[in-house]
Amino acid sequence: MALYPSNLTLLPPKSQPMASLRGSAATVRLLHSASRVRLSLSSASSSLSISSSSSYSPSSLKCLQFSPLAPYIFKDQRSPMSTVAAASDPAQLKSAREDIKELLKSKSCHPILVRLGWHDAGTYNKNIEEWPRRGGANGSLRFDIELKHAANAGLVNALKLIQPIKDKYSGVTYADLFQLASATAIEEAGGPKIPMKYGRVDVSAPEECPEEGRLPAAGPPKPVDHLREVFYRMGLNDKEIVALSGAHTLGRSRPERSGWGKPETKYTKNGPGAPGGQSWTAEWLKFDNSYFKDIKQRKDDDLLVLPTDAALFEDPSFKVYAEKYAEDQEAFFKDYAEAHAKLSNLGAKFDPQEGIVLDGVAGEKFMAAKYSSGKRELSEAMKQKIRAEYKAIGGSPDKPLQSNYFLNIMITIAVLAFLASLLGNYVCF
Image (cartoon, rainbow, N blue to C red; front, side, top):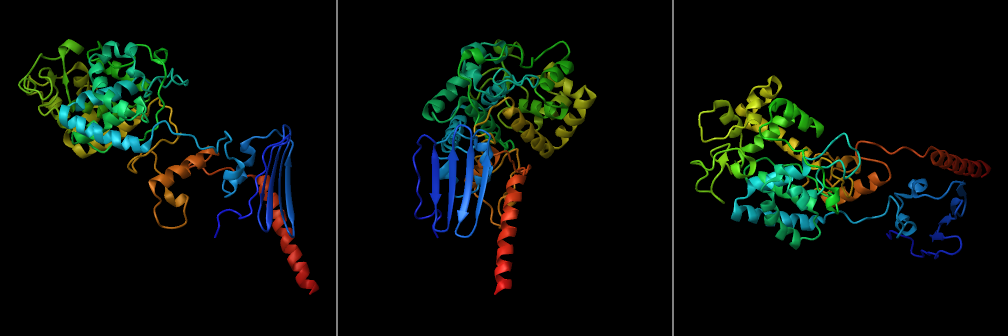
């Protein structure tokens, strides 16, 4: 069976642009002028005509979205139903991830790549709506003006590590690459699978970088108040603050960069990577819950405890989660994965709006059953396509589209008239 009528005819625009689509039994006609839209449907036995005096806009033609003829009507038109290239290419994202894994194996740079993603996203201010002024995961950290912020000391080395991958995959934005590297580093270090999505749009100029001072400090006068002030501004809560702090199970603090920590310890004097610094845990390239255990016990002077670390077991609300994670690694992994994914999305502008999922795991649940009456699971590519088209006309997996009541009434009248005609013919016979 052919998807489109075999004798389809398209007429080019003239003084009044018109698309005419003809089949053997029906004709759909769309007339477009500056002041009027007319849609008519006719067949051999009946006709339905809908006119509007309002100016033309694609939103007035939502009823055509699911018609197989829609691509012919809206071809090459910049409307909500148009197909627009995403910010990042999914195939290149997957390839870049494999290259990041190789980089991690050769350089043992897990901690600094996690920090790179965090510091790009952590500038978000929930009280500012305008993008990119609100900050967040937008790739602005690639510019020197932001790299030179005191909280970003040393991150130029992370950018140097990741730049060859960016050069290789031009179809991946910096914003996505930073977050991809951060999540991959967590997973490759033995941490949980992060439910990431991609498609973040990059800022284009240094002038779009956030001002200095949005990132947390290591030793503020009032650690508890400082943590809440910074992370609440991002829209995060106490549980997420404690869970994210657990990422300090990876990495070291170098006094020449942050002003905190010893020049070297028995755990860091031989590397891997450049030797030196003071780590929070003995196995500082392994992601687990030892950070919480070590802070609670404080039995080893060679392990770092910052004022903001100690605060997790001092504040009553923080302590509930810190104690829980020290005892239950599975609970920590679960809460950390959710918090990391949330952090990575802060302030980001996505293209497509619903993001790109690489592995069928994302923060937003997608129910294929809402789009299919069968039991067979849809492919990820098809899910993304359906979600993009559905959202483009105002819907979402959890929000049904509003009905076009006028069109429904007209269709109902037409169906009743047709049934009445059949009944009349039957009575006469």
